[in-house]
Image 1 (cartoon, rainbow, N blue to C red):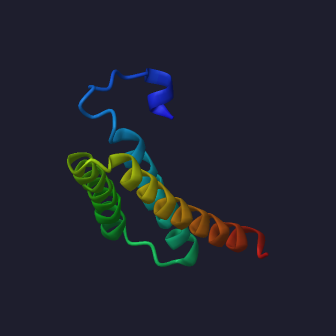
Image 2 (image 1 turned 120 degrees about the vertical axis):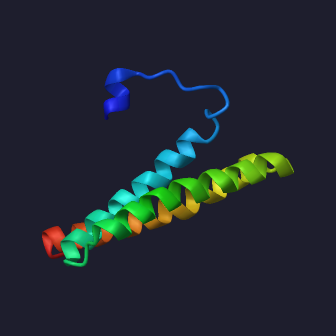
Length: 99
């Protein structure tokens, strides 16, 4: 949200990795919210999950770029993280609405 308001300038070197890093961060946030609603949230686990998700996703895309299959690996990362995000969103919805 802050990025939309501030509109920071992203270096060209980082540009291909930013969308994947944002999706990975969203996965950690939704996982943390789900854990909080389930009563099992641990702040250290959240921070490690958040940072490791972003780093691993960026490394996968970087490796894909070096191997010449960056678009395919980026798509794979987005699909896997998207499934996790929607799974967590469904669990959050079930918890909130008891449905």
